[in-house]
Length: 462
Ligand code: GLY
Ligand code: MN
Image 1 (spheres, rainbow, N blue to C red):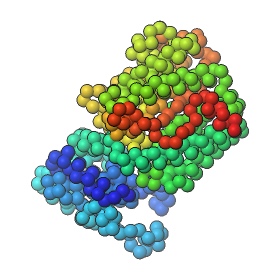
Image 2: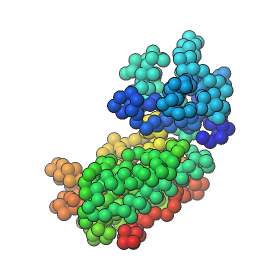
Image 3: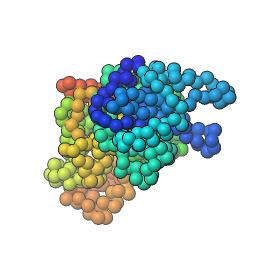
Image 4: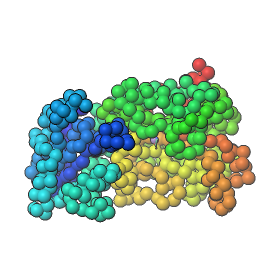
């Protein structure tokens, strides 16, 4: 945990911004894998972690704005329960560490909520993203599950996004730690991969590193010879010469701050000339995007500029044609780049995505597009000093998508369908790095990691 002053100050700030009412924050529950006592790894809710820092299941909290008070609700384990779990610090001690004066037992929250309801006070709560949260909100507030989304507190969401989006120095330190572990995972993948190995063998090895360094994965690793599928994961597929391996992985620290990096490398040790051509286009788009990062710039504009760079490169390869800006405006490039350039990074890999992309990555001025490709851009609004974001352009040759577009003659004034046949099995290439937005520009987070095709070939050769 950080020091108690940090959590107290964060809650003070929240009380100021939300203005009035009571704020109900739910910690997460344990989740059973296949029977009650066999559990998935526990992951605390990130907003609960941000305001209270307590990494334990079955907790709730109420922040009362007008009364300037905070109550933590939870039960201490009995000695008999601790026979199974080992010693657990009493909640009263954890409350002290996070600067909360009042601790009540879990069942007592019902009375506090009923009391607030009887006084017609506004009860602010966040969008539920797990079934247990829906159950809890339904039984505590008496709101039908289907109606909860309409009753979430937009003012609470906006206040939390405003706070969590700007990272404090101690958070940047944690994120950097996570990125550095992720760098070691990437280096392990790049150096260990050999023909005949399975994707799963490498994915398992890099998971080891995340665990051994005290945290875990920040999201399930994407480690694949099928990089054209954006979020495919890994399988028992065997690496062969000629394949590219796309490794998109991240560690989270013990405090749950995340890293998220991607590299793509050739199994044989050398990129083929077709692979290198594609790689260099992605690298140029990455560099152009990274060079633009600074406070005030719309991330949507950075994304669109990267799309133009990709389109220019594809034109030079003979796969696209026509006016570059017009091609991007009409979404033609999305055949090869059907996703966004990046997202915020923090306590979540896609930071705060559970609060709603329209509040995290967009605002009243910048509305999320509905166009294929651009609609998957998670962050469109102006960057601010203290944001931590990813930059992750890619080129993806998805045969199914290519065939469908070709059959429809979609965007055929911009796409050379007759030239695409020989690229249908080219796979996918992505390059991803994590940046802090600084006063005048940006700072690349983490230790160096080979990035150019040449640097990657040198590491593969050694
Ligand atoms: N690294 C996975 C993602 O950004 O979706
Ligand atoms: Mn990412």
